[in-house]
Image (cartoon, rainbow, N blue to C red; front, top):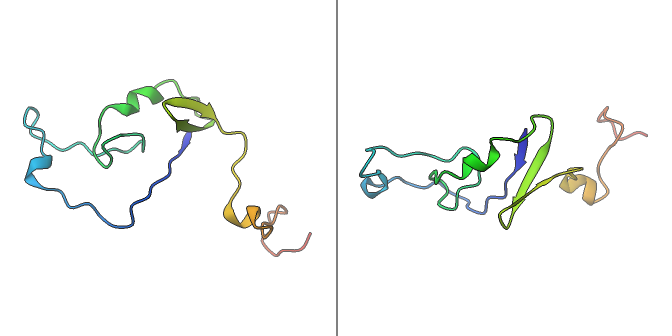
Length: 90
């Protein structure tokens, strides 16, 4: 399974002592891209448990949808190459 995740930050996040969970004594970093407290885990990954490994998903407004087709910026601008050989000839 894959997930489309849109990130807006352009730099790193420095961890501070206040980022440590007082109860667990650790810092959990989000790897699914769905956390509302990104880059920290908030348990949102639980929503991904039943994702099909052969599908690509997007989560918007709390809803999961299957992505039928991913269009790259180059394809959207008309510069994409559907032949797959990378030489630009069709």
